[in-house]
Length: 284
View (cartoon, one colour):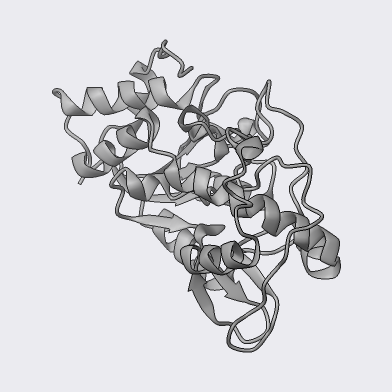
């Protein structure tokens, strides 16, 4: 259930007055859309596949594609929650000038956010590691369904839990058939950044440029455990930009935060958006 109570955001309104804000989001903002995160209090144990496992072990690769064949559909059906919608409203109001997300679920885009950088890619794209060809996940779904008729529609797989990387919790994957690139026969991989991979350098540079054009950083729903998110908090602090963190539970960036809210994203961001829809004048 979404959190109902919002914290006192008066200090946040004062801090953001006259400032342009870039937002960094993590899996915690999507939990109210039915996508569990990896690390928040009460989250189920999860061991996301690493890049080395995926490319180095055909059994791991088979298991991933079997689970993803079910999981990506659940993620595709997910819808933005109040937190996503609040950030889109804050962009329209002029307070939020850009958004960096570690999520691959596209829920910010679905909510109407325009200036979004998907740091880790999205669940909707697949690429060949040999020739670099990119295809849509829907195209691959048709090919996987032809190779594994009825697998995704098996009643035993209805309502399974789906991780933030579209990995569904399915035990029996031994008979699943993996398909290769239709152009060159190379290995296909979701066009997302796995654990053990680095965010593409041009994407990181674009994100730093977005942050440098703003006056403050708001972190929503990220424990900042991995460097792909923490580096932006460190950069903001180093360049004297205020950092606000909204997250249930501690984060690696807490000591750098100007303001810290141990609270849910949806109620906190909704309260902020409601305030800016009122008599507050956002930055331009």
